[in-house]
Image 1 (cartoon, rainbow, N blue to C red):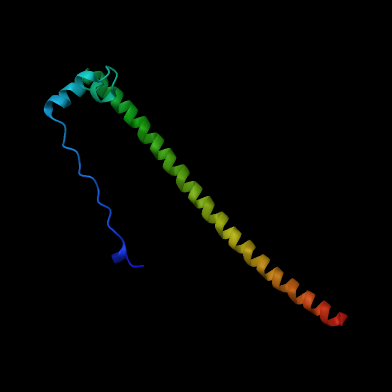
Image 2 (image 1 turned 180 degrees about the horizontal axis):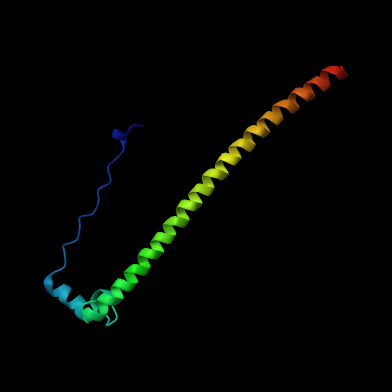
Length: 108
């Protein structure tokens, strides 16, 4: 069935954005340790903390990326090895079938 026969799903309309009063109310209800608002409290200390956490986060992402790339390389090597083994098994299977056929012919 083509795509023309399918019904299009109607998405619900987006809600209206919050009013200024609702935003202010949310800000006042936020916890004191909320990271979004704690940055604004002490800019000097928070800038240093932000730089340190940012640097450590960047380092963690870098290491994670390196591990990912190494894993991808190992997976590609494993895939190539499996392809070689599969081809060897297919060749061995064909050879075995020929040998079995020869044995059957000689037994008759």
